[in-house]
Length: 306
Image 1 (cartoon, rainbow, N blue to C red):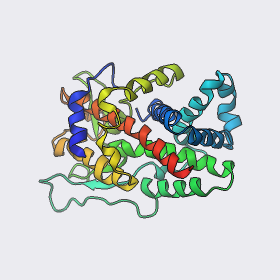
Image 2: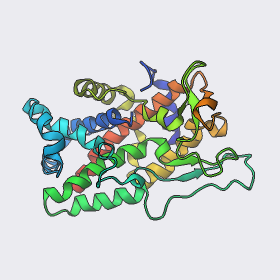
Image 3: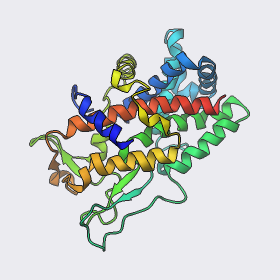
C-alpha cells in the first residue's frame, strides 16, 4: 500500500505553484465523487443531492449560487460545497474542531527515552467522528436528519487522506508534538517566507475555489492513467481507521518527515528550506490522496444511501 503511494510520487510531475485540502482541495474531492456516482450509481447521486438540498443552511449558504447555475451543474455545485462546509462553518455552533484529525505519534529513531509519542484522543478524533456521522447518515429517517452528517462524511473522508491530519512528530524540539505539522516551520527556496508544514501540505492540490477551474482540475486528475481505479491499489482497503493509521500516518513518517531527516524550525523566522525535490514528491502524493478521497466518498455514499 505505502509502496504504491511512494511510487506515485515519482510519476506525477509538479505543475504550477504549490497551492489542496483547503477549500479548493475539498471541492476537487467532491467533484470527483460526483463524477463517479453520475457514471456508476445515479440513484445514489440523486439521493445525496436531495439530502444536501435539505441542509439547514442551504438557503443561507448555497441556494442563490446553486440556482444561478445551469440545472445540470447544480448537483455538482452542492457536492463541491459539501466537501468544504465543515471548514466554512468554523466558529459557529456546527463547528467541531477536534473532529478534523487524530494524533498517532511518530517518534523517529534516535530520540531519547524522555520523548514520549502521543496517542489519539479517546473521546474526539477523526475516526470516531467519521463513524458517528456515517451512522447518522445511514439511519436518518428524513433528508434533513442526514444533511449535516453527509457534509461531515464528505469532509472527514477528505481530511483523513491528508497525512498530517493523522499524525504528529515527537522529538526533543517538539516534546508535545508538532501538532500535525502546525508547529514545524519550513520555507520553499532560500528567499521563501516561513510557513508551517501543515499549511504547505494543505495547499498542494489547488489554491483556486473557482467553480470552473476546480471542475476542470477534478476531471483532469480523475482521468490521469496513473489514477485509474485499477492503479489505485489502496482502494481495496475499506476501513476508515486504516486510512488514517496504516496510510496517512505511515506517509507522515516516510514522505512528510522523510524518516525523521526533514529539518524544520519552531517558528516562522527559524523556518528551514525544504529540500529541492520535496515539493514535487509531496504534490504527487497529495494529488493521489485527493483522487482517493473522491473514490472513497463515492463508495461511502453508496454504502450509507443504498
